[in-house]
Image 1: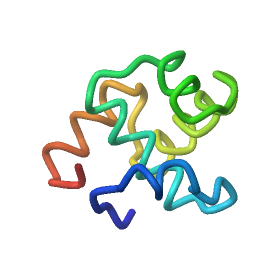
Image 2: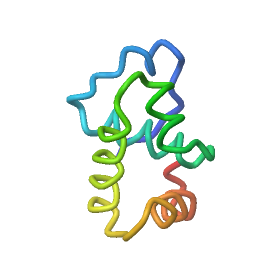
Image 3: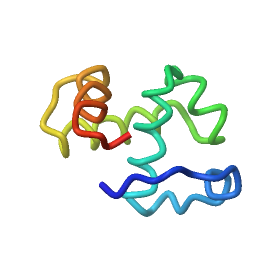
Length: 79
């Protein structure tokens, strides 16, 4: 993961084929307390797509839930 602050332009124009972009953004939004449905509305993607990204994040970080992923990211200064 290569995390950095995203601008509104970058969020709207995120290349969803890029794992880094989608993982970074979705993990950051989860860390901000947004739900799956709110993230899907904000990014104009389906909740299923958001859940798939979350599963990929969990595998990459070797955690078992989105809460664990967010805690891991904060503890390791990823977000």
